[in-house]
Image 1: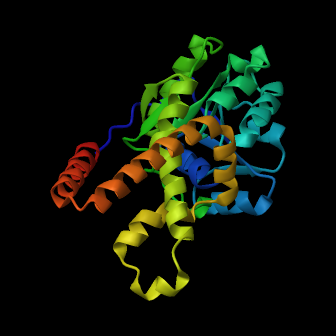
Image 2: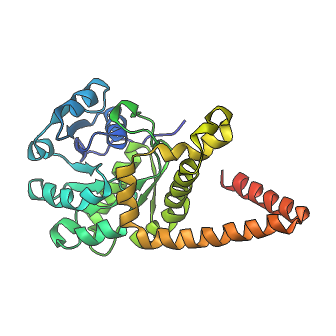
Image 3: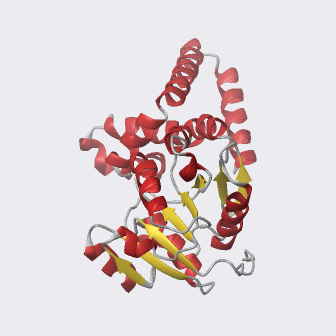
Length: 285
């Protein structure tokens, strides 16, 4: 059972900008700790659903009203909207409030936020390593982040006070915080998240629909994440293009090596390769 820390005295109200799967799950996890949660969406029906499933206390279609007197603002939007929204909310929130996010890329977002030093010191970029190929607040859960890694990527512009509060916040949500630089984050996630998604999508797109009656659990496991939101993943690829290209090049080389191994007819080496892959999988999880 994951132990949730006690709510810090400074944290009473949080605003979630974007009440989807991740934003809704943040809201649910906070509400179990007694935090009041406001939700913002340009579509009133999204907030209505979020209230109904217990993700937020109140919903707003006006961003300034949603953020009024909040101690933390969580930007849970597509990555290409995080920096502009952070600048917006900084204009009408108290200076001590923390602005954080849930984006899957970091370097470009942090660079954009750093164009305004007053926003940059309050912005603490974060990426919860949790989620689903499904989208929408109806799939949110209060335990989504429990025990999961939350990567935080401060830089020289980040206020130490805001960083400390962000770490407390994400630990209250249920996560284990790990600090990396924005570049370290993007290079690592290109390998363990962005490349796998593209490979999954490639496998799905190259499968003949006529094969559907023959599809088993292996294909379904390999292509599960290909069901993710194409618009969201296009923005992720745009933000982390160089690192993803490096990973694709390396993967292409490894794929050619595997093809050469199979073509060689050396089944002993092939089995050894498969055994090593199995052991690596078991080691990582």
